[in-house]
Each structure stands twice: as C-alpha cells, then as structure tokens.
Image: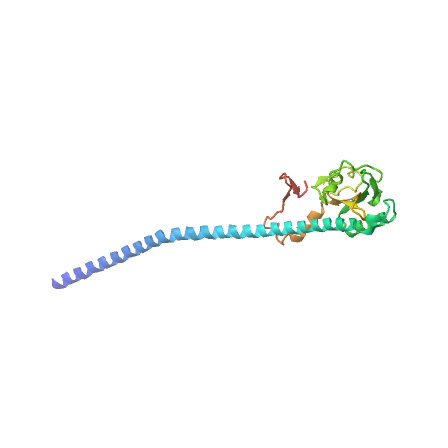
Length: 238
C-alpha cells in the first residue's frame, strides 16, 4: 500500500513535471512570437528603407554626374565661341576676308556636333557660313542674334527652323534639334562689328549620357531624363 502510494506520488509528480515543461515551452514560444515577429518586421522595414535610401543615393549620384558632364560641355562650347571671337582675324579682318571661311570650317571639323557656324554682320545678314548655308539671308529675328549683344548666348534646345531643310535628315526621322551659341564680335577698341553664331546638334547629349550610364542600367531600369525650365522633356528625344 505504501509502495502504491509512492508510485502514485511519483506518477503524479511526473505528470506535473511534463505539464510544467509543456507550459514553459508554450510560454517560451509565445514570448518568442511576441518579441520576434515585431523585431523581424522592424528589421525587414529598416532593411527595405536602407535599400531604398542606398538606391536613391546612387541615382542622385548618377544624375549629378550627368548634369556635371553636360554643364562642362556647355562651358567648353561657350568658351570656344568667346576665344574665337577674340582672335585678331575676327577683331580686325574685313568681313569679306576668305580667311573666315577657313576658320569656320576648321572649327566645325574639330567638333562633329557643330551643325552650322556663321559670321553675321550687325544688320543680321549672314556673311560667311559653313557649307555656304544661309549666306546672304537674314537671321536678324533669331534669338541668338538679337541677344548676343547682352553677352555670350546659350539658347534652349529647339527644332531647326531656317536650317531644317538644309541639314541632313536624322536617320530616325525625328526633327533636327539644335542648341544655339553666339557672341558679339568687337573691334580692337571695343566697338561691335559682327556676331558669331553656332548651332550644335542636340544629339551630343546622347553621347554624354551614354558615357555616364553604368553597365547593367537597362537591367536595373535606370533611365535618364533631361527637362528644360518649362519641365518639358528634351532628352530622350520624342
């Protein structure tokens, strides 16, 4: 009878111990669920946010690089126009000098995206130009001519007008788009004597963007867009 009681007591204690273990196990699982799930979601959220932030920084860096390269190219073109206008040929020689044609042709040959370069008198009549295009015609109403007296002019990207039917058509059939540069030419004592105008194909922007675009950009769905001050997309061309 005492042995029976002992076996019953031992069996009861075993039952209590097993149930206590089960209870503790259940409690630990519940505790892990309570603590672990919010932690998991927090870590996941933070990781996702970090990925977005990192990608944003990469895209910002790419956009900044592209803007810097384009701005530097514009400065180079601007400086090129200014330096040419300050040479003795442009400040002293008669506007009908044959040396101007050679000078303009050399400049066009130095940069493949120059579509047209012209020397214009103060009345707005083209005196000399690459390819002989527009010679004898008036460009007095063109913004690049009218605003050249205020300093070196860099215009907005626009569809070709006077040159639209004179320049070679684009292979893709899209309108020819140009970017204008101009500066007033002054004589040795500072009096205005002519205007130097340059049109550059806007396609040069595609080449610059290609240079700064990283490998695998298409797989990462990275695209570059350039907009003007009116928020109109000017790159890529449409």
